[in-house]
Amino acid sequence: MEETKLTAALPNLDIQILHRDDPERGAETIAIQITATPSFDALRGTMGPALLASANPMLALWAAPMRLWSDAMRQVWAPWLRLTPPRREP
Image (cartoon, rainbow, N blue to C red; front, side):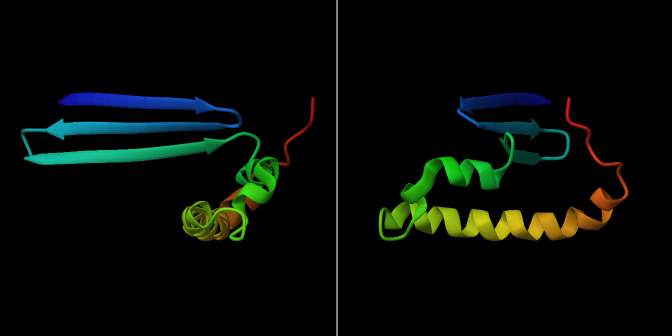
């Protein structure tokens, strides 16, 4: 199986794109992983007015589905995250 990985490290945001060919199954897989540290909300706060529709409509069009997706993922993971002990600050 061949694999190609593309990574980008931005301030508070890491992006990884993984492409795999599986000739035995005649399949191809592309996975995109976006990690915001400490969180997507914090990243949105650092970008400030750049995410406002009045400041940049094209960026706002991109941000809206990402915000919807992150809110949906929070709801999906919420029951599981409640089972974990609270994180202690160092």
